[in-house]
Length: 99
Ligand SMILES: [Zn+2]
Image 1: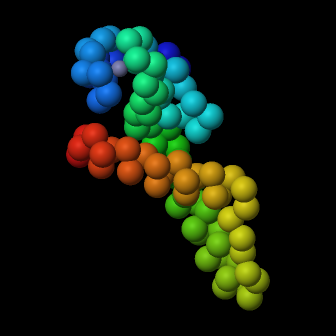
Image 2: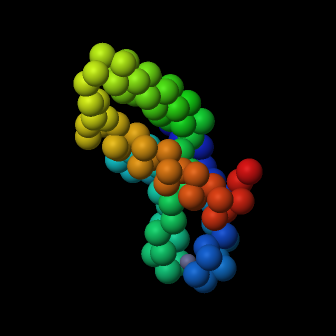
């Protein structure tokens, strides 16, 4: 899945540039300013976001299912990573006021 170039204004030095972001570990888009090396993180691309949301809902259902069987479910490392990714995505989008 190739990322398309973004046109960005650096919050540090106000330099405007167009660059193709790289993808970080959880699928966030990362760009560093060519002028001052400031690193910026951009929200998930919609494919990643949708995947995380679906996995999140499945995880909740599985936790509910194990609760109904009288067991205490635990989301595990992957579950925590998904929650973190969704939360970060929401935070970044709020900061950049994408919504
Ligand atoms: Zn800069």
